[in-house]
Length: 195
Image (cartoon, rainbow, N blue to C red; front, side):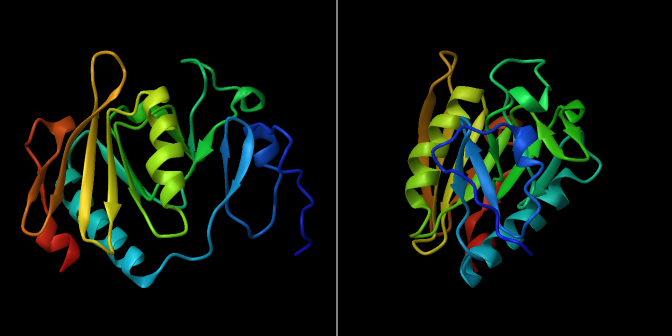
């Protein structure tokens, strides 16, 4: 496949993104290309698979759905904006949960999911801990989890009434994480995730 010569200093839209027919994975942060790291580690993949299974089982026959990477989440600046030429932020979270199913289409999710989980690795930790944190907060993702499979812990943040993330806590060991978007009806057992 022919390599694309993309200018990393140029601002692109989702319409541009759709034309890039190569085997590279990218995200757009306010129009600027962020290259995805090569295939994640085995520990990352195992953690992702276990979390996906837990979420999928819990959400079976419920109003919400879970998706995992690679799946595009388009985050427009304003609600109701579904014009590909004016969407400048496209991310591929490790997992995301959507309860407003009207946001889903064959290209992924248009608008903020209710919950996003990012699984960090040494090569992408700044992106998930700082850059994506700010993007998800700005776009109104209600709950954000940062999972560290190497240290076997999870940091949980919940959007407050002012639209800012509040740190709920760090979970590790045999902790069970209450899922805030479900008012604690689901608690993720970390022993099951990291076993």
